[in-house]
Length: 304
Image (cartoon, rainbow, N blue to C red):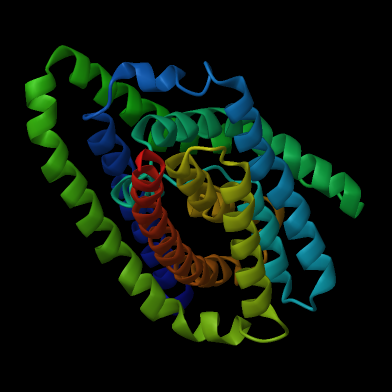
């Protein structure tokens, strides 16, 4: 087995581990969720429309503009567009909830965006291909398989178990979520080490700036369109800036199969996006901590 085949086998095993972690993440979170969460956004069409506008309209436009404005490596341009049309990443669910996000909105957004991705992703890629003057095709079956395995099946299984055996579901949720976190760390860290030279080779020509701008615009767009509820603003901001790396990788591989640097480019964006999101979370917490102190003071002055 030569070095290239060994690397492909390594990537395949890592991809399998990440998918398994995603499935466990979704299953673990859904064990604590009421089945009614599936209808949360369907019953709030305005919030649903704002959410889809942020993720499925604004971000693809931003990605195309950035790809045309910066002299980026082709792999980076491909991945920005691929990330822009990908749905919410399942691993983000736990982070949003730990950050204080609205649980019903988080899971409802994840379920809705994931389901719509089966139709939206192939259509969006085909449309962008027409704009670019070339034929781009992502098989619907590829996206559907990813969404079914990593979203719908584990979510449905968790909700069903929560409804039938809530005590068992509550006991199992913690260990399953912990196992998912350990698995993704074990899978991702070797990737970053192995791909480090390729990731470093992509830095330059405005790559970091373009990725940071893409992430920041996503955070700002989600925050503005998230509505009046601060927790839902938080969820949509993080969901808009962070996209599903598995779907993005599938899009890149299907549309540009000969481009070997798309996986390192996605890994680099995940690092940049995580840093930008951490800054946003710090600002969000400070801002709302200040507001929570100001409101009681206003109430006391009004009462006086």
